[in-house]
Length: 176
Image 1 (cartoon, rainbow, N blue to C red):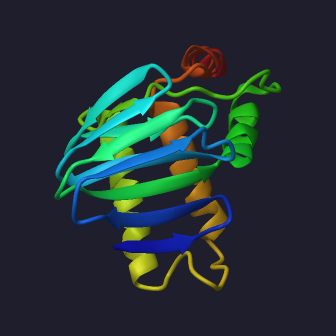
Image 2: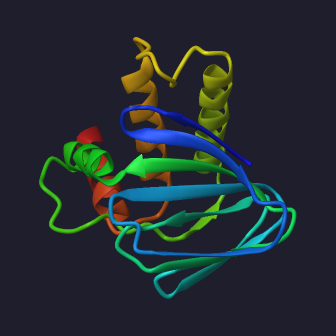
């Protein structure tokens, strides 16, 4: 089962297979994929990192790293697919400089961390809006771009990555 709603820079997806499946997409290239298990478990490898994903322990797939996964029987996940170029534009705006290479996230997403708990609430609110026809879909809603930006920025600022240190320094410098 696959439910999908597209926006400009990201899409929201619900996916379940009904049986154990091996998925070997290689490098995703054009997008990041954040996977939040609603039930069941998955074994995810992105580059050299391995994640035992389950409720409370999500994963993010970096586009420049080889990926392979096994979704175990009963695994149901919400996925947020984020356009790589859009994420990089927002990161560059936050940093105030161009990025020399792709942002690399820690593939382990601990949804118990306070910042990621808030981000997850925002994600579920966006899903609710999509289900009620108030966001995403075939027509462009007036608040759509802002909603997508907030979801991307929320993840970018709360999930450890190759630019986390620079983002934290920029935040401290901006407060002086």
